[in-house]
Length: 68
Image (cartoon, rainbow, N blue to C red; front, top):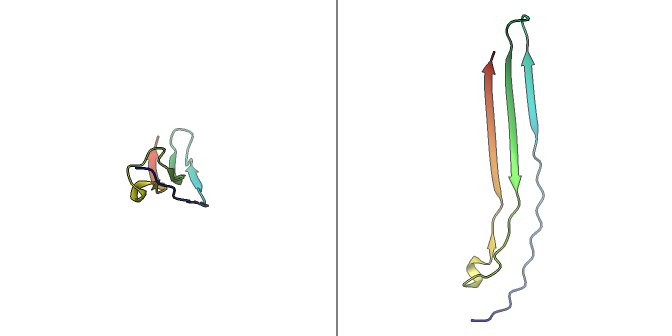
């Protein structure tokens, strides 16, 4: 099955990372981080139908809290 489907994707995203560190003494510390990541979408090289020609972007959000 041959088909020609003109498609276009334009994606923009902001991927921030924020971290805090607190050191109340030389022997102890605490930290917290937040980050958000982005992986762009795209096109399948050999789609079986026009319905699965493109794939969507992926996003991930991460939180971390810890101490030493």
